Image 1 (cartoon, rainbow, N blue to C red):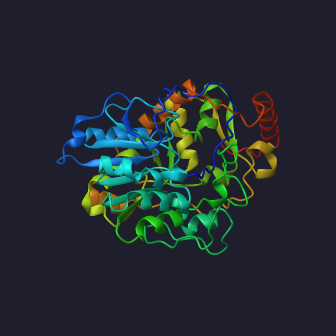
Image 2: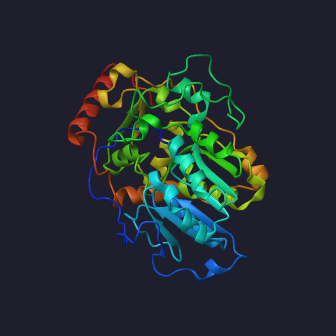
Image 3: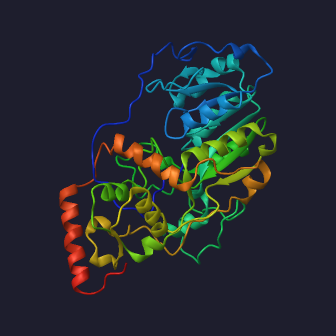
Amino acid sequence: MATWSIGRARPTASTMRPNAIRGRDGPDGELHAAQSVPPALADNRRMRSLVVGGTGFIGPAVVRGLLAVGHDVAIFHRGEHELELGEVAHVHGDRSRIRDHRDAFARFRPDVAIDMRAMTEADARGTVDAVRGIAARVLAVSSMDVYRAYGRLQSSEPGPLEQLPLTEDSPLREHLYPYRDHTPAGIGQRPPWLDAYDKILVERAVLGTPGIAGTVVRLGMIHGERDTQRRFYGEWKRMADGRPAILMTERAWAFRASRTHLANVAHAIVLAATNERAVGRVYNVAEEQALSYREWAALMAQVMGWKGELVAAENERLPAHLRDDAHTTYEQHLVGSTERIRRELGYAEVVGREEGLRRAFEWYAQAPAPDPPGDEKAEYAAEDAALVTLRGSAVLKG
């Protein structure tokens, strides 16, 4: 899944986390089911999928999609969040020791392993080693942050702007480990794996290991339920609070990036995992058209029934919490072509923009950010003061 998050108002609220059912821990590596072992596990005619890390943001939707097309499914995870996903087998363990669970995977006999959360080269190589000789293929969930255009966007790779849209054959970043010198917006507390994060190395491990086939899906920015980065949360919160305006720089409002709702991503992953044509292939996954952030905000306002203003201002005239990230060069947009997956696998969206936003907003209301990065009252006061100044100096751009 993508870890990057660009051009959004800062989240400000706090409250409870989304509901989850606590798992029942069994012996490490023991294959067991949340309710009962699916009888289809003994049926060689049914395709079997092993999902690594299937209880987070996108994983549950992938599992449900696989079940819907008749797969037998097992999930490898830590057992901390035992979601009710139907007749699914579970293997509990730490992914850093995933190789220790080869016997459990061999008993399940997966045709394909889908790694939802390979963040580092070590993650990917661990999964490949754990299922090589057992599964025929590994599918890795990657990110459009592999492209050189992302290096331009983050100011880490100076040079001319990259040509758009980005295809699966567009140049990749030349510098590895994009987050060693900063933490991306929306991440919160810096995770220990971030220094070693690089989806380029994940892709190489999955596509370049002898004896097992690979597939890669490169995701754009994903929003929806259970998104711990809560993309669009800042705008939703201000609209829900009846704020008079949302402020950003003109560059941030104009920025275009490939995005889509998690249900569409899950559908794409299921297609790629179940179609032999996807063997050895790489696919961008996002909406066909990349809207500007202003266009997204206008759509959010429509969904929310919000009548406020979308205001653009120079960076130095905005409150500190709304100023552009110093790492970001907004002139480089991040728009990927999704023509390949649509043509080869027949991919099409299953959830529209408005419905995707509604689902995300419903979840935001039920599970606001647990760790607000700032003082909401103070930030709103700063925004009000900036708005008065902008209107008084006649530099407000609607």
